[in-house]
Image (cartoon, rainbow, N blue to C red; front, side):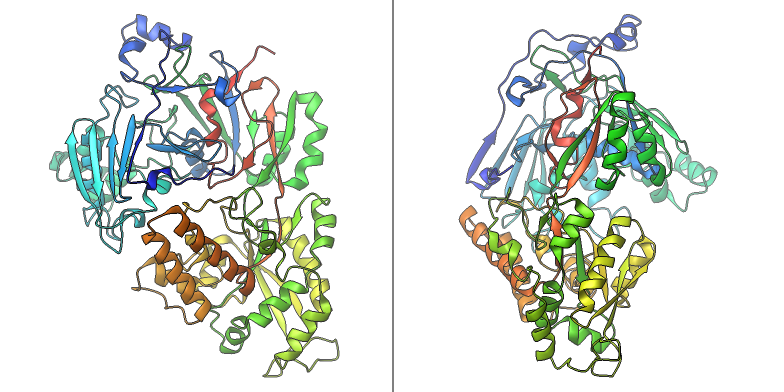
Length: 632
C-alpha cells in the first residue's frame, strides 16, 4: 500500500475508466419482481455507463449470485458499518490506496482548487428515482448553507481559510466546487470511511424540509412524533450514515429493510446499484446481509461458534487461539491482517492538564522522553503480543513511503540509565521510602493513566509499564472509566495521562492530510484544548504555547497551501521528525495483527491485507459487493 496519492493535484486531471461490460445479466432474486412489473429490467436500472469492476486485475474470481452474509455487531448504531463496508463513494480508494471515480463517471481538478464532478447518466437511487445534480443542490442549499440545518457551519473539508467554495450546477449531471486557493483535504474526505456526503435524495427529503414541503403536514408530523421542530424531524429521516431508516433511498450496495429498535437488521440488494462486473452481472453478488446485535463482550464467543461469516469488529489478538479451535468444526478460517495504526497502544501526556505542576512536567520534553525510555517494549511485545508486533513509537509504518527507521526508534529503546539521568536533570532527585520520586511540592510522582475501560490488553500493557517505570522512580496507577467520561476528563484537564490507540493512518503518503500531527481536534488526547482551538479556528479552546507545537500548526497550514507533492512531502517529514523528537505521544508497539474470521465458502476476501479505518474502511476498499459464496 505504498502508492503515491497525488495525481489529483496536477494542473488538470481527468479520471475515467473506459471499461465496458458484456450484456447485462439479471440477478435471479430479482427476476420475479421484474416479471411482475415491480421492477424495470436491468438495462433500465443501471446507469448508461455503469462502474465496471475488473475482477481479474484485482486477482479475484467472477462470482455467483445468492446467499446471506451474517455479521455480528454490538450496538444499534453499528448499522453504520453498512455504510463503511459498502464503501460506495463519489471518489474512492482502491486496495493500493489510489483514488478513482466510483459513483462519479469522472472528475476534473484544476489547480487543486476547482473540482468538476460528472455523474453517470441514468444513475438511480435505490427506489428508482434519478440521481442528479439536483441532489447536490439540495444538500448545498437546504443543508450545508442552511443555518438551522447546520448551526455549527459546514464541514471543515468544505472550508479553506474559513471560506466555503462557490457551488455551481453546470447541467443535470455536472456540478462544480471552486475555492480561491487549493483544497487539499476535499477528495480524501470524500473517500473516507465516514465520507463527506455532498448529496442527499432530494425527492424524498424535501417533504420534511420547511422550505420545500407542506408546512401543515410537517407540523403534524412534528407533533405526532414529539419532535422538537422540523429540523429534528428532517434529521431523523436523514440518518444516511447510520442507515437505520428503511425509507431513505441509498446508493450503497445493500439497503436496510428493518426499522429500529431491533436486534436483527436485514439489508437486501440495491436493485439500482451502479457497479457491474466485466461479465455484465450487476453487483452485489450476495443477496442479503443479516446483522445481529448482541453485547460486545459475547461477540468473540458467538463468532467462534460459527455465527458470523465475516468478522473483524470486536475481535482482538488475544481471541485468536480460541477462534482457531473452532475452524474445522464450524468451517471457517481465521486470517491475521495487519493493523495500520501508528501504534496499537499509546500513552498520551495531557499537555493541557489543569494542575499547573503537572502541566509544567508534561510540557517538558525531557520528562516525556524519560517515560518513553523507561518502557520495556520488548517485554510487552513478548508477553502480550507473542512477539508478533513491532516495538517503537507512534508514527508511520514501513508500508508508508514517508517511513524512516529513526521515526520508530527515537527515544524508544529500553534505557533506564538515560531515563533516570533525564529525570535527575529536571531536579526530580528526592524519593520517598518506596523509591518513588517526589515532585516539587513534595507529593510522590504517581501518574494516573485514564482508560476508557474497553480493553483488557490496555490493562495488561499498563501493568508491565508500571513495573518498569518504578525502576525510574515513577509510579503508574490505572483509572478506568467510560468513553464519554474519559473524553470529558481529558478536555477538562483533570486527566494527567491517558491510553488509546495511535494515529489512525499509519500508512500515509504525502498527499494525505497530516492533520493528526497538528492540533486540529478536541479529541486529540495529548492537547485537547489546543486541538479545539484549531478545530474552531480560534473560537474555542486555547492557542498552543509550546514552540514545537506552534511549528506543527504552521507546517499543517503550509501543507494546505503546498503547490506540489515534493513540498507536501518535505512538510510531512518535518512534522514526523518533530513528533519523533518531542514524544507528544508515547507509542508502545505497532503493526499488530487483527483476527479476521472468514467463512470457508466466502470468496474474494483477501488472505492478507491491512485492517484499517483510514485509509481502507476496514473491508470497504476490498469491495464486499464482489464477495460471494461458493457451493461448498
